[in-house]
Length: 81
View: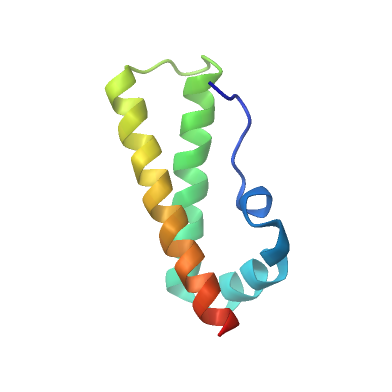
């Protein structure tokens, strides 16, 4: 299990500028990235035993993070088009 935080700029290094632009210009995108960061930080705290949680809850958070990442990626790809 990885204890590395999955920051969006690390997940999409080639799209740092697009992430910044969309965060400023698109309220829905900004909400998604805020939610992603909240979930991601909670997962990281669980992984590092700062805030232990049961495995089922951690899996639920991971699925939520993946769904958010997929939607963010879709919006980034649409912005490129």
